[in-house]
Amino acid sequence: MTELIPPETFRSVLLDLLDETFENHHGIYLDRDTSLFQTLESVSAQEASIPVGGKCATLAAQVAHVIFYLEVLERYVVQH
Image (cartoon, rainbow, N blue to C red):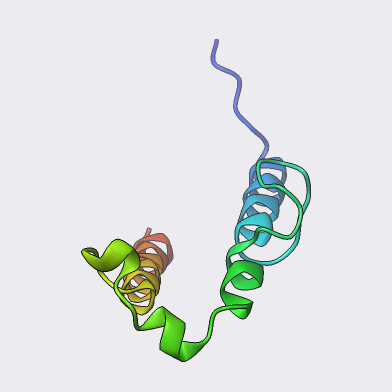
């Protein structure tokens, strides 16, 4: 028989993962002070507008991609 994860356990772990990804270190998978917002905090708008490595999209464009896919994920989760 397949064991199911209790919904509250799944929710709690998912929220901790998202929190670590964007704001607060929990020691799950990121090093301390490397969350997305902490990393971007030190980057100026001017720096974010420079193509990464001279050939790739700018950091600002890459962040826009992250935002787009988070919005897609949000719409999916809300609808299902």
